[in-house]
Length: 244
Image (cartoon, rainbow, N blue to C red; front, side):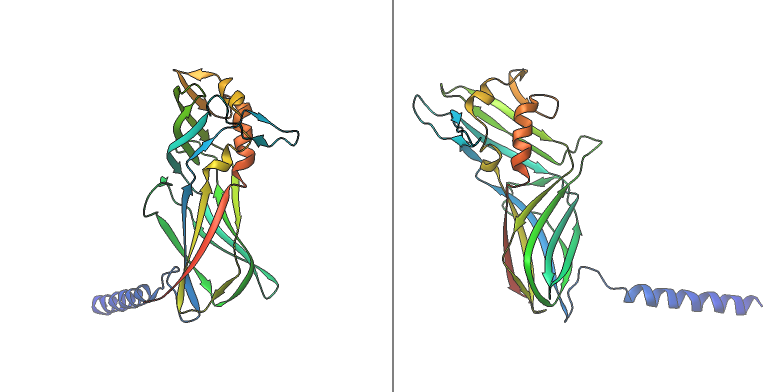
């Protein structure tokens, strides 16, 4: 009896190892799919501020007497999810990948995460970066840098964003052939975040230890202007590379 029990356990273990070893990685491409990698970067880290706005609410550039500017030196994102939304044969389609933590948006080689996309032609392509409110200190987006006044004085500035929000960027139609893998890059255009911020807005901010801190609770007027432009500040670049 003991011998038969041992044989049964050994057989069960063998089958378990067999099926475990045959399990496929969900992010590995096959003949009918391609690997889709998402990454995120930023650009236009420095931008001049306008002296005033026009009646449409858009900031107007003004250069006399020196120009105030913001230059971001660090940009860290914590992304909850990446998504590609499109239509395939007229039917809505979505592929998503888990997010990434502590993304350095100034990195030369950005961190990426992969999913799989089936072979086909995709139209109406949109790339989404999903930001989710954090209960800890790892906020979805933190920007740090310097604000230079029109007089040339340099003041540290920080923007802490901690809310739910999706950054959406449109992209060109995509053909997936199963022979090439796809890289979907989302670029955060930092200059667009302050497109509607004036020198007066910044000069009137409250200071925290001689620095400008912009959060939902501190300097909320400037925060809300940046928040409005954040969801429209993304750009996209989709590249296909022949699989080796």
